[in-house]
Amino acid sequence: MELSSQQPGLEKLLFRYNPASLPVPGAEEELQLFKQLQQDFSHQFKQHFPDHLANKTIVVVPSLTLDQEVLSKIKGALYYEERLLCLLMLLRMPCTHVTFVSSMPIDPVIVDYYLHLLPGITGYHAKERLTLLSCYDASPASLTQKILDRPRLIARIKKSIPAGDVAHIACFNTTPLERTLAVAIGIPLFGCDPSLSYLGTKSGSRRIFLKAGIQMPPGAENLKSYEDIVHAVAALKDMYPQTKKAVIKLNDGFSGEGNGVLTYPGIADKRDLFNWIHHNLYQAIKPVAQGLSVEKFLEKFYQMGGIVEAFIEGDIKASPSVQCRIDPFGKVEMISTHNQELGGDSGQEFIGAYFPADKSYSLAICEAAQLVAEELKHKGVLGRFSIDFISVKEPGGWKNYAIEINLRKGGTTHPFLIMEFLTNGHYDCTTGLFETANQQHRYYFASDNLQKESYKGLTPKDLIDIAMFHGLHFDGTSQKGVVFHMIGALSQFGKIGIVCIGASPEEAYGYYTKAVAVFDAETAPASGVMSV
Image (cartoon, rainbow, N blue to C red; front, side, top):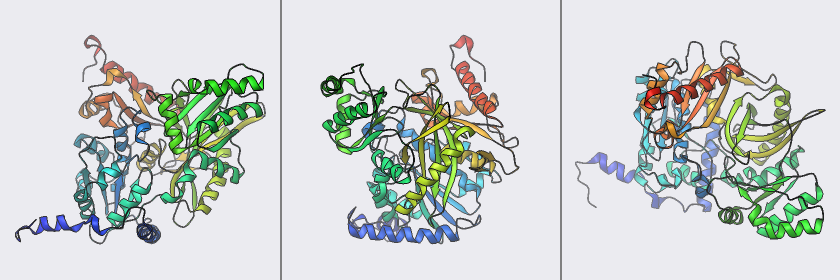
């Protein structure tokens, strides 16, 4: 192809990025280049992160690079990319640029909504430092794969980074695809080296819990075959006769969607029980993901492996989590605690979260998480991750079982970032409380799954109009109110994310119930519609 000399801009764009000049994905050369980039990130973190006025660019790639078949069972999964729009709040730093890449274009109304929340920065100033790029591809492939398939898009990402800026990639999770993308763009990842991904699997989590010396449910890991599952399910009941249910988990499940639940029959004889398990296991497994057959579930299990563990029973129990961070210099931080709300027919689906976790067990799970984080630090883990627990109230107090490590951002990451950015506050793990910059305590309830059929058809503009009319918007003066996310999923799926911030847990949840009541009224039949 011959280019006219009168088209220097086009020539620069077409030849700035040449995928043929890069190493083969996964080859030793790529691994070495990635290692060099990550070493450079340590300098960037030390010199530029603490400086509010440093010239830096964050390239946000909110790809859920997970098993696409399991992910497809989550309604509106494509719009989970919008959860990281909270990182647009980094534009409150006046010399920071953000490049946000998505599968499909983000509605300008949604972008304006986030920029309006920025404290101390005008929308115009923030827009000047924001670049929005899209693959224009709504297929189920991961966003990172879509970007890698578009060399010109990679060229535009590189071009969006101003000369002289330090830059890094912020992503949802890190896999070999994200490593290849980092090398292609030539900037580091603020995340865990993909070579350590096993540590964030269900099997890897159990290994780390064992090394850290913390309690976890009885079970077995590193299972690969149907026979492995049969023997593990039988052995679990044999060793712990009081166990009523077993949970079969894919190593790389997401939001509970990679789990299957089995209820033991009331058979006392061990041999008869083993025979029942051997002949009936297939029919007895109930996958959590809606529409996922047992056949597909087991096919995924054979591909990625998994674990079997006891379903923890209890009259009073909670599902808390601890969010942690390890920086490039090995400093471990306990960032937040949450009470996760689980639901669905199996009680395994992530519905939402209360922040912070109840004081009755929050300090104890922070101590356990610290032990886990220290083990992960020694393995070389970098960035944000979370540790999930099941806590059961017993006569002598709460008993905490570590369930899994998520070496990625998760359902509790963006709500906390939203409140942290909006209030300039911090969580104190020693007190179990969050304190704003003006020394007030704040709490929130957050959900990614506020969904009803009646909400379908509401556009982003409709949402903003309704929220403004009914006083649901976050108020920067009182530092209370509602912040929405996953707004793009509302019209097609009737689904939206919500973070409700209040001065008490009751007030925070009160904002949620108010929002639900408002949406219900606004989408009721015509005779009951509230006028906006």
